[in-house]
Length: 309
Image 1 (cartoon, rainbow, N blue to C red):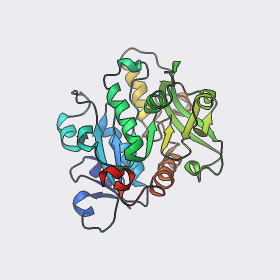
Image 2 (image 1 turned 90 degrees about the vertical axis):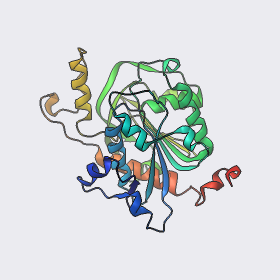
Image 3 (image 1 turned 45 degrees about the horizontal axis):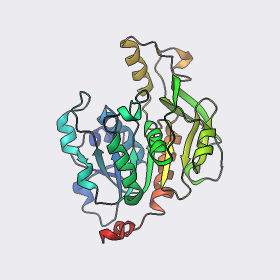
Image 4 (image 1 turned 135 degrees about the vertical axis):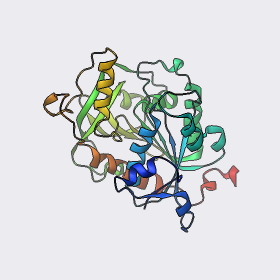
């Protein structure tokens, strides 16, 4: 089944060119089916690019999904036209009384910024706490994991001395865990972050189950036992060239970034990279949608919060 998005969203044509099944809202209204309501809180600067990446992953599911884009920072951005934001994004005040089957909170380029200096930190905390009552399952990605661990568990910000960038081999810890069902024993996933997630820290200060990790990156995939929250510290949504674009950008502004690990052929930035993580990225999102959302969400979302009935 397809994802359901507004007819005019740029991702419609972008994904259709990749032979991705996208259903516009006008067509979806003709079907008698209750789609899963999924909220995407997009914190990345290049919002259209991030929309395309996550919608591509979400579309690879047999479930019909009704996607709502959310923003919490109304400041102007040079990376996304204001017309796009005003047309396709809602504000938190518009949806705070509603319930959702799933919520995805993306990463953000805030690895070197203290939480107290993040312009929209109070709004982030508000959404995360709101989701505990209004969302069946929430998926946090990269920087959003660090934010959630601080808000939910009081874990202080942990920052690496050098940026972690590249594609790393991970191994699963529980072969029968639902979130990694169908995974190979080892798999590849990209990372691009200053945030640090030592496995022992997670074990000592949270009740999270750790499903996958890597020696160089620490914990990669975690979740609560009630499936209400999942955490992925990397970027399974990244395109093949996203890490390359970040590397070239840093070089152009005078930084001296390390070449992303195990990414460019022969570690040569002049050679085009290839994606080696797509299959597990798609499987991860499909497993989250199926086992953490669809299998436990009520048919009538008002049942999640009796006060809404």
